[in-house]
Image (cartoon, rainbow, N blue to C red; front, side, top):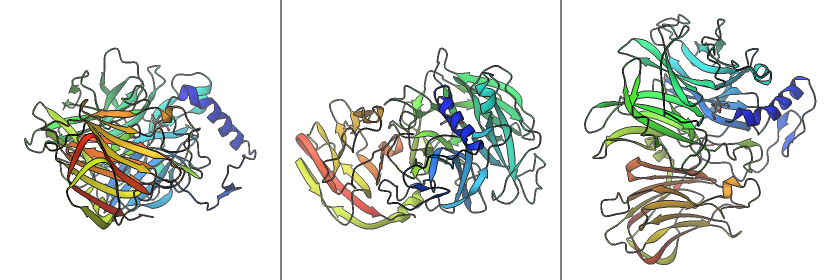
Length: 524
Ligand code: FRU
């Protein structure tokens, strides 16, 4: 987020609250509590906060059968404000139980983004080997220092839990890493255990690059190196570094995830990645080879779970399903923002090198209800598709016969009686997938939201991968193509639920070898 632009109003709100002034109630709120009101855009199988504002996923770890998910949370408003870590757990990454807030702001500042690790060897000394501590590393953001124009108001701190994340104690020696370089943007620590050097490695976003630090006890940190793109001036946020063993070759590459504040492929903010090696001190990757993890507008701050089962060729992660361009304006009432579905990252060769692919975690298949399996279809013009599903909450699996498809453009449209339309198209001339949400719902909350159509490169030629998997959940679409190499995530806000699904083809035929549509159950 661009704090330069946003912190002033937020600070005013923070001060007003601490002075005990009455806050203006928002629609749907009564003093002190949120009343139940119909929430037409609440996703049914995506994680959302119980109420109020949420942004980045934070502090994710797995322990004793539970996946923990914390998140940037402001429990007093539906716009960004003094940050806490909200908290939830899941046994399967599908159903979530909300837990009390894990970390509250304190005299060192708001609690910004970061990651947690399970300290199995008790290197920190906070627990024992029998009861290993979970240690959260996060940024303390001091709004007073910021307002005073200092440059050292973001520092790194830690907290630990000895009861499976239920309660957290902040370390008395915080901050563990001060900001001494005069660079204001110094945040979002993500820590991993590096087996070869037997050290903890922290990756930190420092304005337009990342820095790496090492520690043996999570308390004292030594600077190692930096990685950036020469000449880049975009703001980098929420990095993550981890190894992945490639399926097929068995070789290991290191993945550096970095979220970028502007000039994402379709505008605003998005998550990118680099591939390389990490030798314990330096990330050795090609800075000119920055790739997008997701081509849609709404997958930011994607980071991964520590200590998760699944072996060394898989890494589980989740992203914030919004974009700083309009996140604070979207028309939800008592809450704002959802996470993407949890995804499993894998590395594979594509003939020229390694690529990352991400697909929904397998456990989501447990949400499948009645199945509609359509026979081979040859779509010309428009064809409405119906079955035992509602297009506003379903999974669509399509296999196109690219050799028999003559249409230059084909795709699917979601619509409703109010005239809202969301169009997903495939353009064989330009080898592009595109999503047009310009007419997807009532306008008026953000100009940027209604720009488009948004596009992604995709191989629709004879060697292309004809399989598509699409998840629709009331107000979001997630497209997985090319076996997970193409991810495209976007949100939308129709005036009433989409109830009509249409397949269409322009100038020729779309040969659909198979179309399977599952109705999906709600997790709440
Ligand atoms: C990314 C971000 C982080 C920061 C947090 C504050 O969305 O700007 O860099 O820690 O949000 O909420």
